Image (cartoon, rainbow, N blue to C red; front, side, top):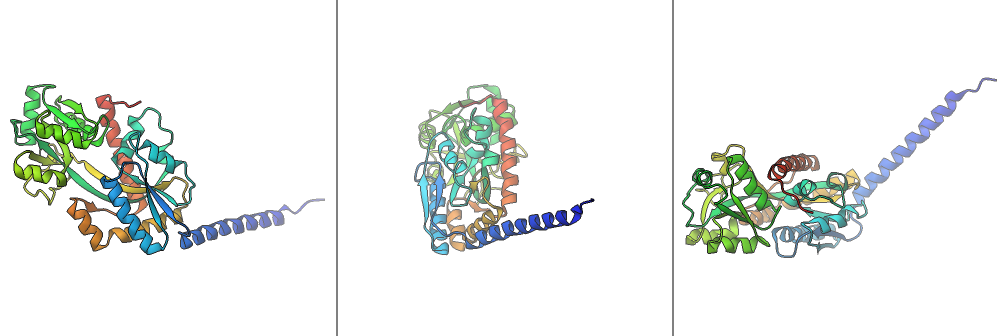
Length: 329
């Protein structure tokens, strides 16, 4: 007797379809009702820095919008690895977020063994803001422009010194990028943080550094430091008369940037809800004014756009790190 399998196949297909629709409906419902409990934003740095300040401002605004408490948790250490690992191994429900910054785009190449896969275990939510840095020189440096600095370094290989907040930090890698693009060799002097590196520059222990524009303004105005260039694609409104590095080295573009990520398997609808609500916070005049006062610009945009930027940063810095032979155990 011949069995009629068509009916069974149709029933199976219908059942599978109903299950899929049920899952989609459940996901949509989760996104619509999110959040239903307190959230936390993990900051992989000590309190007081730019990442911490941004997380607290955004957290306060989200608490008001959601009527759910947003707790900021500082988990510094390991060049952001400790705090990032907490989020990478958290439940994929959108209730544990992470402040991400340039270290997250360099660590995949820089750190020999990460306890997580950056691209797999993190889901980017939104690009918060970025700001250009400034190339600051000690007044004793006989160079008043990037062109003159490169010429000096070319005539004195490994004698022109630049400071950073430590091996593998963004200020270190920015200096290596300048050396590579300018085809010169300069001597890197690492310090234990940006503050001691800045003091070393002011005292004349080193000749230049890439630093943040805002805290450097009093030293620039007093003549204790000289601003040679800014690192963004356009001139910084805070220092309108200071040229960009790209005006001498076309294509040179480096930013201090900030974003928010969640655990990698977080549902897309929850990511979309987070992106929408955080984006609304960023678009307020209060937030824009606050960031502008710090020399930063609000970015916002979709998770996909942030992901495209992030992947490009990983690729860009991987080339610099490998060419310089930098490695952190």
